[in-house]
Amino acid sequence: TRRRPHAGSMDTATLDPFSQQDLTLGTTLTHLCTFLTRNLGKHYGTQTIARLHDRIRHHLTPRLAPTWDPLNPSSGCGTRSLIAMPGRFPTPLVDAALEVGVDPVVWAKEMNESGEWQLWIDPGSICWRDGGWVWVEDGYERERVYKRESRSRDTFLEKSFRKAGSPS
Image 1 (tube, rainbow, N blue to C red):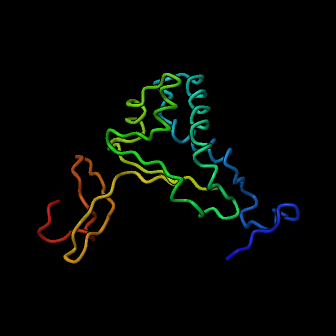
Image 2: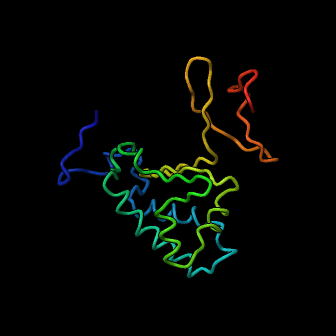
Image 3: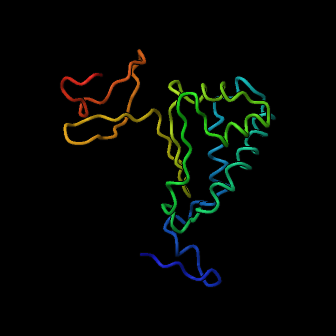
């Protein structure tokens, strides 16, 4: 276990192997906003998107700040995620969108076709998983596996997870 030095005596360049990275919440939220709104330019103007960025920061900062620790990025990572399912866009994003006049349905469609995704937001890292999860029976216990969409939008599982005779 890594001990955290007293704030008054720490030399941040020697504490963090990623010291060349800006691990602040503000910088990470800037990258997150850019990623989340990357496809909205064809529907909304730059001023609307800039206001949306501000509202996203406003809604996510109090939610992410309590567990934000650049010296221990994985601490609290399970609480710093956004999950979208078909018909259910993350509440902080819906609130931000409605405040600036962005249609959450249009935004959700621009994020991906399936409406299922998850984002993990950690100091210095934003991880995106496109698609959903499904449960499969392996004969002993249920197992959660990644669901993928084919070009025809038929749901299938990777061959390594398929079980003979199971519905695909």
